[in-house]
Length: 528
Ligand SMILES: Nc1ncnc2c1ncn2[C@@H]1O[C@H](COP(=O)(O)OP(=O)(O)O)[C@@H](O)[C@H]1O
Ligand SMILES: [Mg+2]
Image 1: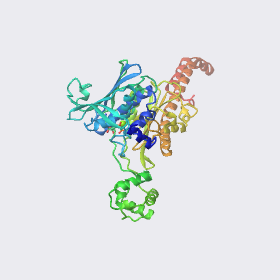
Image 2: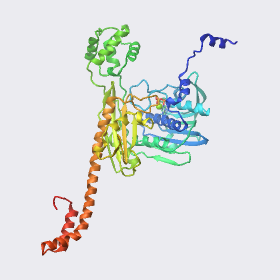
Image 3: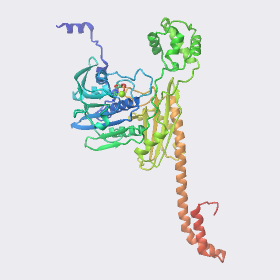
């Protein structure tokens, strides 16, 4: 018997599991439950990263998604962007290590949060086709790096197969030089996939992305060679989100304990002031007072129950709400531009609410309604759900947006309703922007049903609904008037002679003309 086997027996059945092994077995948690969904997830993770990286440096995004069927249920996906690019040291970790990223530790509005997007896609590629991922990345004024990377799932570490510098001017560099010469990233991977059209599709995901990011130009090449362009209709990016510190009303005990452990502040008072937003000297003193703890104590001398008291005190003390310049809503004007260019509706309206706070986290709600025109009535309404500008295509009924839509009395706004949902040639867009979106799961598919979030959504929908209701109301009234006008004009021919006869000496032609003129000028029932 070998030593290794002996050791395992001694240790029993227990073995540490790497995060990569865990997600390899539980890939459905990250959106890889079947071949149709997985292709959307891969595109989504790459495109989200591209848009995040463009906005970081205020670059107008240019993204190309190229999909080829290379075998039955196997696709090669290539995604190119003109974003800031990645440096040589970072590339293997981003693509070859799960839970590695630049956004997790920042309280800042971004599309990605956990650092488990694109590396999970690379893992899925490797798991289903055995192929590593190829990455080309170039930062401004730097050489272009080409990497071929696979994930060592047992260790959750990258395994570098190729690490080369290539001439960005050469033919080896993929893509259109007009867009990608200076900076950007191209990713290639082979995955098990089923390319389809319909609600759950790459096409729809990109269409929704184009609505919410109308300053991006996105091109899709489908497996049959069909090219779809989602054009850029605005050269203006929304204001870049700013990073903020946590608010005392939004932290939990374990997090506060860790913050205290890592802090090198000399007093509790300075710890509170430095690590949190909206805590000045007066509030710090007030929190300590309320907790019965001396402001001058060294943070690392606090016992667990003292930290708990401090947290409870911080939640009782009245503090200013967190600053909201960390949010980056797209604004009413861009929502309208996005809806108009992709849907061509007869009527559209948008509302951006003021920022507010849930559990210490700032958030902001935006809604848009698009009605009629090219939107055809096909059963119920269409929902466009977004979290930090990212379309959510799945788990509709578990999402707070759907709950909010169902709380609105749509028939008050001249929109018919089946059950609780509106019905008609209608798109309902709902966007939540937040530094920390409370998703219901790792797959980031639905937003949790928190009261303050649902209430804000409902208010925004009602405000937009009123505007749409007024438009439809006017339109319906006008249609009724037109119908009456047509009827009255037809009657005028017979009424003219009849009135003339009644009056005895009237000119029947003149009377007919008068009636017609009156009807055409402005039909007013009171006048007749
Ligand atoms: N196309 C890209 N351009 C620039 N940086 C990128 C790109 N893709 C990924 N990154 C970097 O890699 C990190 C990890 O990406 P990802 O695994 O999707 O996690 P997340 O987006 O949640 O942080 C990002 O935080 C970002 O810093
Ligand atoms: Mg990401």
